[in-house]
Length: 492
Image (cartoon, rainbow, N blue to C red; front, side, top):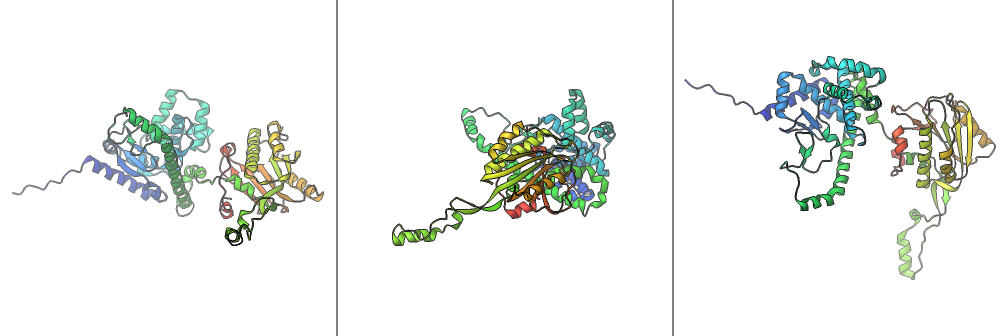
């Protein structure tokens, strides 16, 4: 009698890979708008990893034995963990500023990711310990209506919970290891059991003095390379976030309110930061500037004359050129109760710095700095950017009432009628966006700069342009590379 054919048992690595593929298939079937994001992380088995998952934006590291053990105990665990890790990168959690408290930020990100999963109500991700999260979730919702990572982090930072409470929260909401978010990986590095990074090959420390010296000489180059790699990853995941958001707003609208937390989290990720330098240059007007015009200079005729007639150039560069320079400018500050004085001061200082360094002004200027809430409270007339720079530190803010934009426009119209302004290049209005606009279009260019940390771009009349700056944008704003006019139109 022939012996029965024995089917070989797949190795643990192969079984774990199949479990991971099953989890990805389940999520793709339930959440088609995340299909591209789920394919972004390349699975890499790491037997020594002490957690279920760890990610660096390119790879998903997992321990095959741990994955199989958790799958046997609860089949939803790998699916839940995979979605949890993917949401971190889709929501931009690993790409925040490195000076944050890493423990609190990691916890805030875990809570935000779990809130998104809870709202999506996916059966394949349900776990028995979900009920244990509800008591903490209700407490957080009382102080954070939108459970985004930033809002939760600010709350945790302010509340200063003791270590045992933070440990309890971490136990409830954590699904992966975040050590790779903050690490500075070298080429060929991989996760170690404690979540740190070890060089490829042996797990021993570098003890050779020559190798250490070589490493030191490469530090700056490695740091620049790592920064470029992280920025590339950030852009890739930002594009995936845009795709997911667009899909949710169109083809996947059936998810409706269940994707509310996800949409809140995607808003700051897909938010386009304003290139403030180019934004201000939009207010320039063509003026003749006494400066060599390289654009009008023809090098061919110049060298031909020198060669043919002996030091007699046929064409010389023009000693003037047309350039975008500002002669008259109005800056209006909304000093209603909802606008913070220190933010206004930071905005004015950054505006002054950008204008001074970009060379946007002519030598003789007229700058009006107007403070207004429901009525004009203060007017400062300045004739140079140096005067504005000196005024900002000692500027006293007045108002703090309601918000009405119309008095500023009426005041500027009066200046034009009285010929105090004859070549007004534009009005820049800094506000939080809640106010009454004029009914008629003004005869000059107008821009509203909104200070909004909720990343919402308020509606403005058709005759105005707008830009949204978060508080961090204002405080950290620096002059950047110039974009073309076509590019500038795309982000307004």
